Image (cartoon, rainbow, N blue to C red; front, top):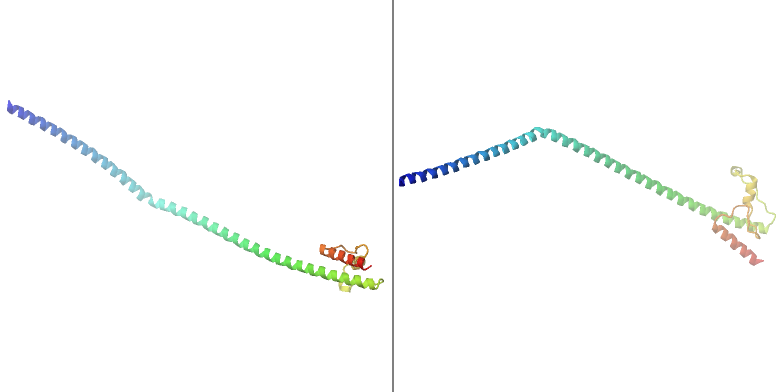
Length: 185
């Protein structure tokens, strides 16, 4: 009996080991299937990338060209805006220079007019019957009424003149002149 028991134990162990081997083969087969499936998926992915790569590359090239065109348009717009700003700045500077020159001419003309008015007032004070002649032919663009009104100096008593009072500087000079005359009397 002992031999039968040993044989039985040996057979049970053999069956258990055979069972373990079958199980290991099944696991290995499953792992191989999974690996084959993974390889198949990877091969399909690589194939798709290889097959569609030219299309992807063409799409990216189109996108890059589009971005380049937008960048070029933006650069041109910025350049145009800069040019316009420079032109506007130049026009502004010229206008300011012209305005400054005109203001200087106006101040000079006002000074000359004030001086001439004082000279005329003094001349009419010395000779109350003094009247001015008509301007030369080339300058006769005003009516004689305007000329006589413009050539009438300040009235010493009222401060009125035949022309508008002018700037505040002129009015101040006129007032000072009147005050001086009143003190002399």
